[in-house]
Image (tube, rainbow, N blue to C red; front, side, top):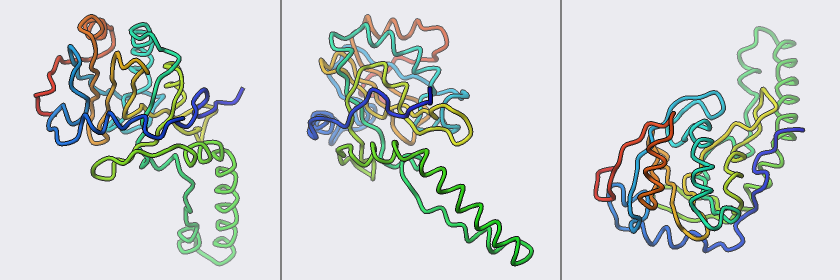
Length: 231
């Protein structure tokens, strides 16, 4: 079976689904500008490199860490099958782009080689576009939530376990090159996961018992924080 990006997810049914998040974060500073206030406890989760995520951990909690979190978060909500996601619209692999082949044309040593390189580059980009068409179509159909500094979010709905399908199909292997969500919360709002695109760490707010469970997960590096802390 081929790896499918965004499998199990649908574009957000209500385009206003994240409005409460924006209202909660607006005019706040520090951690409170990243994750809503009102939860009993908060923890910062450091990012580490792994082989299943985008290479840069800035703005992206690696898939190994997400997979450790998912069952704990699923058990901490009454609505594990109804979660909401916000993914930054700016991740380049989520969009069809016109990758120019002129570079191949200019740097090749002679006209015949330049023409051949131009042809094969064109073929490669067409093939890649076909492979990624599901991703591009899905992304284009998602409502968007404006957020400060160009951090507009793509909004989507689905079960907690579908977090493992966020991303685009790998160009070199039959897998999804995963992205962690920037915003992730269940319908009952029992917890909230937040990831700022310029940070190498994420935040989680929830009940004290949940945060203690997360702190006890072997393989996660965590630090207890408050929403008054500098982010």
